[in-house]
Length: 224
Image: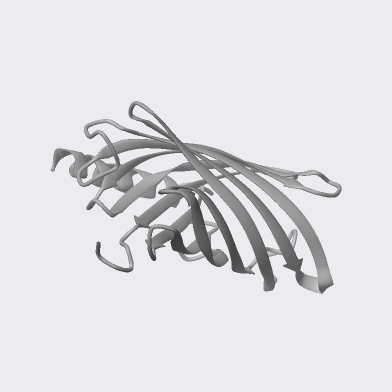
């Protein structure tokens, strides 16, 4: 209960920061459902705002089907993503409305060193952009989770979460962005956890700080 109270107080403090600054905010749902020992269904939704909630920046929906090369690890996945963006026209308060479709392929491998859980994700994206533009992009994600009071990310676990993800185009300009993230998480159940933290994006043309609130759901499709 004390750990949950700490999470709630942190959420309140981060909300206050967002209301008093230009910090953006992402609300995210991550779902990873095991179909059986080999196959899984990935699905996620992200609402991204320029401020706390009411100045929409992007809506992203992503899904995919994965296959475990080894039990619960070394996952190959192929999928599709849809993104609706609302960028501001430079120097105005007017927004554009743009749509992007993506196909993607990725490989995830996980490692454990004591209570340190590492994840490596290698993702290739084929991006179908407005005005018939097409781009390839490569992404490398290195994430870690460290539980404080439990041996793993289970019910009532309080844990540290951090990641770095770099985005590279396969044509010029090569560098797209880099995301640096740190958060505190709490295990609501053995299959669901809540995470809240701060992400700093290093962009090709400027930087962007933002809050991030994420719900992770790994409830299997079928009970064992």
